[in-house]
Length: 148
Image 1 (cartoon, helix red, strand yellow):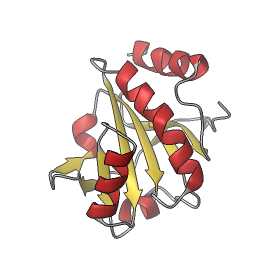
Image 2 (cartoon, one colour):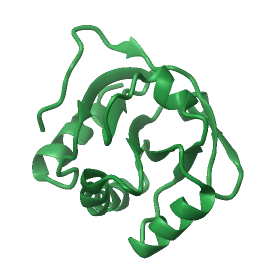
Image 3 (spheres, helix red, strand yellow):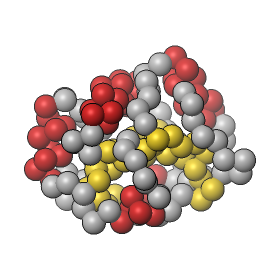
Image 4 (tube, one colour):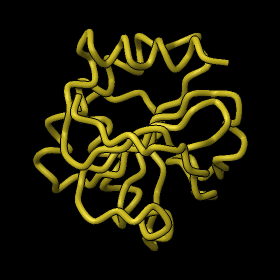
């Protein structure tokens, strides 16, 4: 997968961001789950390319202690809603309209993905699109889920 793995897991920056319905999602509420954070934009070709694989990962992980959040970088609710409908995506999309979360996570390119362990620590990150529905990816997430 070509993931960057820090020598020591680092605490993930906290955030409060609204989803498309306006409900505020707090990262701390996902403690105890493996969390997949993906920073993206509708205009970004690699972002668009990896979204179907993210949807398949999301569907495969249903019922497990796993959360997938697509954090949209500075676009309108309408743009994001239309994109999610067009691509038939069912995972939660959050709106980072001011770029606060993107700044906290030092996002310098899109897409950027961070993987958090059950303790809310960053255990992997990558800039660029990936095949998140590959056997290698599934095995990676299964290992994280098995760790307590």
